[in-house]
Length: 398
Image (cartoon, rainbow, N blue to C red):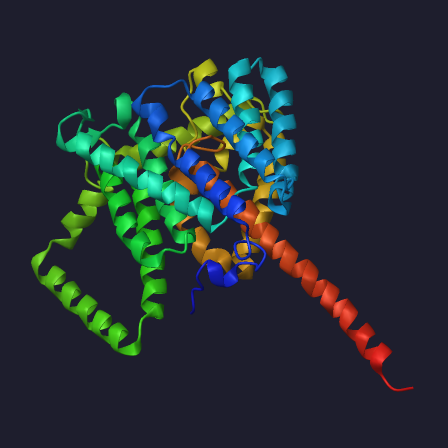
């Protein structure tokens, strides 16, 4: 099976022939999104931080003077449905206004950011995130990162899952940045702080990204180089097999026997989270419990992408799930399934549905951007299939 690189499947309209203004603004917006770690490092209020960044993006979009892209417009159905459902559920459940504002801001941010997505956006995000990783590891080495039960927190004692999501998002951006050699090194860099923060879903996702990048890179090598690489991997594998306790190594990464987060805890209590989400849904099956129900009702959060909209919005949440899954499944069916694989552990175990953090934002950006390319391709194919016979008939001899 051939895994084609991101650019090989890119529409010629996307990144080639762009003006310098488009390239620089896309890179700048990627850097803006990559700098989110500063809001944690300096303990800036998230609402204020994201409000400022959205204004900066809107200014850069205005400076382009090119209007909304088709990728941005392709997100309207999902985001408009999400915003309306959030308002209806919020009114029904007396949701805190700040919680609803965050959902609306997420929608606005996605619409604006989609106008900049492309390899220059991903490169800006990746390179700034590398600075994030270096700063974090430096602070870790100097003892300025707090440790709790062997798990290191993120900046300013924020939850390690937040940091793990940021580094997973950066690693995923490597997959799309068209920088194969540098990306392999950076993915390894992003894995290290994720390992210290014990973000296991993110670790699995990053390892999947590394595998895809390595496969793509190997395919670009000359036959002699691939042969050397092949036998080198076999040699390293044999050395590891005879000298390393693989079971212990796997446990070290996934913490299967850890007393706080191992298998005896039902996947770190995930079954308890999922059960609580189903209970929240059953309590209000039509409109859900509201987007702030974990805080307002004192319940556990879902820790599952698909349970989140059900618990928050009830059957109304099925609408946004259907829109999302339609695009997701079409991308998988039409040859993008390999690039969707790193998202699977995050969808299953991560505690995010809609959030302004790098993940899940990068997931929505990728899916809407790639689906728009797919839709454009299919519309062109239909046009050619209709126009072709007409040209043949008109050019035929009487």
